[in-house]
Image (cartoon, rainbow, N blue to C red; front, side, top):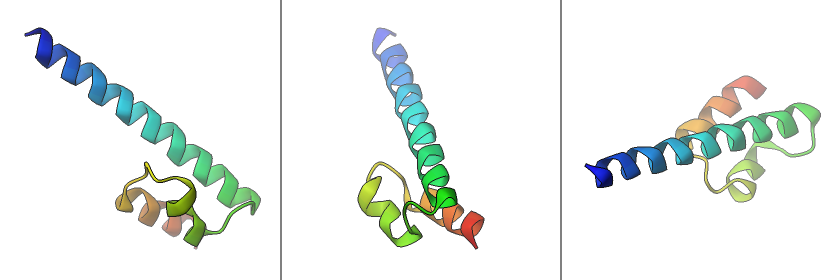
Length: 59
């Protein structure tokens, strides 16, 4: 049972980091500090689906 709870906690922590990273990337894109093609290099923790979502927001 402890292993399941630990896995759930770790997954929640990873998701929180990914959400924060995605928001940071969105802000930098909005400010023009980076371009959409730089996102995957600068934010390697983001999933392809996250990058596609950001790309739609920038279009």
